[in-house]
Length: 603
Image (cartoon, rainbow, N blue to C red; front, side, top):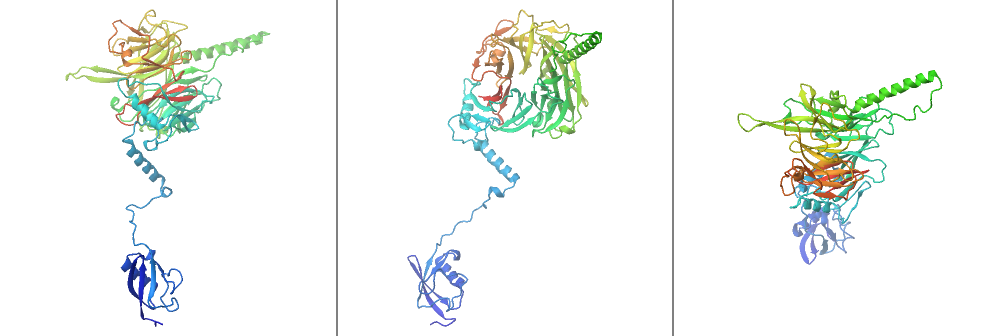
């Protein structure tokens, strides 16, 4: 038997290879493992040293090669099990999602999004998912979630490509997505699109919903100014503001929200028994204003919600005291109705000048001013709609290149066909609303307005129940020369009065146009009333009084009876908005329409 400290020869077998080495009695096993690694290249951590006659099982690395540990035999045969291959260390450490902070997750998501954005077909925020999440492996319409159904994302991309293929490049009218519950009892009164492409829908039960990436991003409630009556109408209108903020009107008040759909400012209506409606905003770009600070300006008409009760005085008075009380109550009711009639002819504006970037977070700290714009004409009719319009005029100068001036116009249409116009100008830290002009389309009642390119305005009219000639208005045309139910295109480029370019009568046989929107390519999309229930597409050439081949109509005023295309798939809609592509220099777009209780997105 070997003595302590003596050397023993070892035959090491490793697969088909055999190695000779020696060990010293009393050494640790780790020394033997180091020698094995030197001759075989098998790391210590992977070695299993077996010897049936010397020890049982794999030799432990912390053992000592003593006489008690092993039964020494000569020669000592040891079998090695292990691989000499080594794994490469990863160039970057593995990071697990659960170990990332919220900021790191957002940064990783943004990096992945930007990498995929370069090759993506469009980025219409309300309609499309982020590019790296569009492989939904679907072949037909399906539920994205309980509130959204639509075409698969890859099919939507294909439809967008088809939209821009020559020679058409026109809106096809195909429904790509439906937002909202069709069984919901509330109807959508208005739509708006925020700076980031989020679609906002305003409902007649007071709810305001935000839609982005085929999902509902928020559902908030517009606060009421007082007890809510059944005929208050919920949220009548919504308008987008600069920086992602937006404003809503209805239920007797104005409400401004920041970009996170959090209420920041509430303004009560100016008169009980009315609610603000037809909300619009006067936008001032940095190029239009030489002062520092931004401007937020909101304007709305007064929609009367309080109506006389025909059952209020149904019992005849029995004595003189009752007759006096009834006469007093009747006089009071008549005074209230007269005040409401006057209010229906007026406009309320709220505005804030300077201080802050308009992004919504600083709106609450602003100083706001309010003003009531009243008609000068005693025979003024109730206002039915509002819009704002930039008027571009060019003046000559010494360089012969001209200087373009932009004037902001606030335009109100009324039930007698009147167009009342105010110039909106900044004066230090306030805004001035200067009466500019009053025009009239006689025999008509104005339903809605839509500003167009090149100083033009689309005016939808229907026959007026009580036609009156406004004493202070300039007539644009005679009632015998224009159809009472049509969309009239007015050109404001002339300095004297707007010129009636053409009248679109495609809906006239059945109903008036209740909503319309100009598309990015210059075409006009019009939505007829309930009896008509169609969307009609008019090309920019038709709006100019030309045929589709560009030939100008030789008559003074062209009447275009048929649209370029009728889109009957959607049906009766209440509001229309364009959903632009968030990618720069992109011509892709979609159209959102309010169809009863849902938002339909069409391509």
